[in-house]
Structures are given as structure tokens and as C-alpha cells.
Image 1 (cartoon, rainbow, N blue to C red):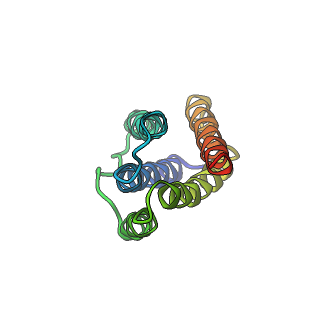
Image 2 (image 1 turned 120 degrees about the horizontal axis):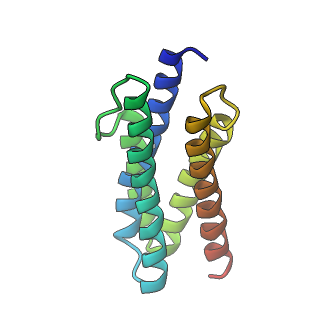
Image 3 (image 1 turned 120 degrees about the vertical axis):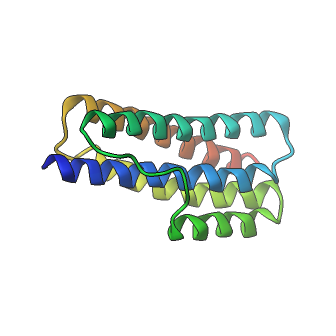
Length: 144
């Protein structure tokens, strides 16, 4: 993959994580259970770390990382999460599950990209985080 293509692809992951952070804000506003809220907050911090790590990688490759703002799709995701979250914790978890399905799909595809090894290591670590987020949220939903 050409360097410009790598930068473009990494920026698409950065945007995905930016959108996830905003969606998590909506979901977290409706979760009242302290232990669950703490864990979901940690997941939001993972998304913030993904943004930081991927942005550093983009700069290392000579590119400019995505600005920290939502795109149109991000507003839709945030709106969907807000609407689902109105029903409380269960709605918030269901919305976040759908968001994590999306991020898992994107990161699952990204681990197969032809990118430098340092970039691949970051993508693989982030993909592992995303898998763990989805598993936890699904388990939390099952136990309700």
C-alpha cells in the first residue's frame, strides 16, 4: 500500500475512534450502575488512546491526522446512540454494542492491510481492544 493510502486508511480509523468517543458520551450519560459505568468509561479511554496512537503514526508517515471532530456518519452514530440510550442502561448498551460491531468490522479489515510493521502492531492492539469491548458489552447485556 502506498504511503498516502496508508495515511488515508489510518485517518479513517482515527475518524472511527473519534465518532466512537462521541457515541460513548451519549451512552455513558444514561448508565447509572457505577461498576458498569467505570468499565465503559475505560473503553472510551481506549478509543481516545487509539486516536493518539494512530495520529502519531500518521505524523511519522508524514501525514496530517484527522481533526478531532465528528463527520456526518459520526453525528448519525451519536444520534442513534442518544436515541437508544433514552431507555436507560439497556438501551445504551444495545446502542454501544452496535457501535462496537462497526468498529470491530473496520479493525478486522485493517489488520489485513499491507502497512509498516509498527503500524500493523498498533492496529492489531486496537483491534484486540475492540474485540474485548464487544465481548464485555455482550456479556453485560446477557447478564441483565
